[in-house]
Length: 311
Image (tube, rainbow, N blue to C red; front, side, top):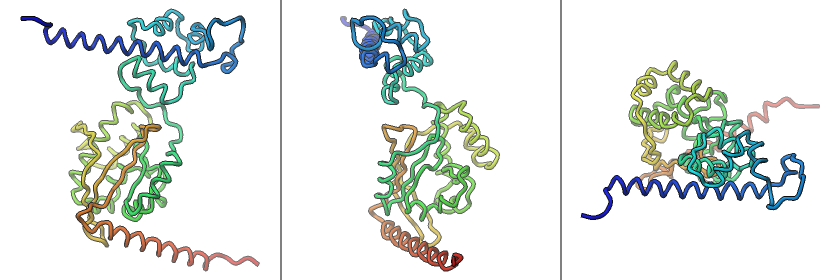
């Protein structure tokens, strides 16, 4: 018999892949370092430089790491930098979010955890896309499943999110605490259990995040069902599916559901409910939107009539 054992072949393939990643990391670090200028970072441009950009010792100084350690990374040595070291180098090199992710994947072979969130905002392009999707209900969720934006069809179907206090404007919170939302979903038990399993899948990225932990604590206090599903520790990723809804005025509705994450903000997700082609859902949604528009116009006229007149 000839050839290597399967275990040896697999080990050799992993070693080649690891070596290739180290080479890519070394080249990426060198290119980014050479693209920076000392004056851009407040460093004195002293002496003549043999190569453009920063010196290795300057990057190491800005990142707070050893020069030898950083040099080994640029040389493609077989070293594994910690996440903290790579984050520090990303800050020193002024990397964009995409470049930071690229650096950490090359350095550790795994995607980085999401950066701490400030005020989450979807991009203007994504927000315009929401409006163009009607009569399909669609909304954008943040990393903690907070509603960041939505279209008129989503409000018409799921309730006016503008009228819900910001601190309660959360997808999973409303699905467990709003009786109207529960009545809307045909098979609420199955849907809620699957939703908690998807939330569990996010835990690996958000464990220890104070805002995420606060949400879980509030849900466990507010809903016995959430506690029961959460304790199962089931994990799911699937976002696509068919949603069966029971609207109090329109009757049965059937949607194809899909979830998308923008490359620029992978912690956000766009959730789209497209009327199922083999149903009358699209026509019902158009009627619902027409009613909503007529009601808002009446409310606007009434508000104008009731407004105090100025002299």
